[in-house]
Image (cartoon, rainbow, N blue to C red; front, side, top):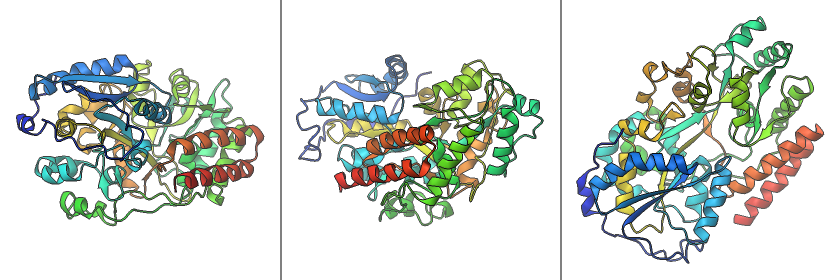
Length: 461
């Protein structure tokens, strides 16, 4: 489905207001001059997906400027950490995209290194066009895209760490289905009952930052880093979110402080995962993006697993019919706080087509653009109005509203910790979690993680 044409007035803007690189990043200082006829997008995924997206976006971009050739180059990876590692290497080697796929994991990585261009002036200038977008998008998602008071992306989709479950296996185990206010104790009891079914993983999980044992950490009112908010941002909140109580107290983005990876809350959360394995409720986890876990769930061999809106399309595409899986809020522990990740497109600071890139990014916020970018319920729309019963009637789950209501029902829900040294944090978390599961010693592993994160934080201080 092609998008309608972009506004032609951007023709007046797209002719090269290229800012000099001027030492904002040494990584891209050796980049060759860009192709004046190409608008380049760096895409997280495989090239077939990039080619499909290009085919869908080519018409509206050419309607804006028929001399422009749209290029979308894919970088595959198991998770965002791998994508950003490869992207930074490509930039250092001279690759110079204009627009980059960026998720929560990379906002501060890109902005803090001077690689991403702030959108403040564009948003302020075009706020009348964007007000419908901001009225429809939670300020929690927008704040996650800010750094040091500036906005670097407009969130298009997100995923909170909810809990998927198999109604069939719950019935087979003689269990009531999870209620919205279920607890970690309820989860534990369900896990024990499900574990008695042969050849079933009562709970399946993966080692990564999003939706791993970190979901239990958030519900235990913990984190890997001390939480704070950067100053600033009132230019946005007072204008785009005037009178919205959900914007009260927000600042200029998340300010991730000192590591607290070996806090009592963290140790308790990781010890829970070790105990789940000891009791046969959960297997040893894989490291990575969760494809194996999703495949096992689709095969009817998993009772419960953390997943976001992206699992709805994934399980449907794997052959699961509506009604064969469902979703509920993550269980309550000390709180029922969830974690989330969000994503959009950033303009690279080195681009000499910033104005054109902005027009493309702005157009992608329109309601009809979502299914062009994300066909098949493979993520949760940032626009709340797009989460409807009609959207999920062909895929399920029955309780689809959990995806969009998590942010409103649990306003303390927050983004995953993603400081400028995200790559080091993610790698260390994977290694130390694997160590804890292998040794059974959460405290020792998290003491090691604390040292890892202090070292990484010190390297960028």
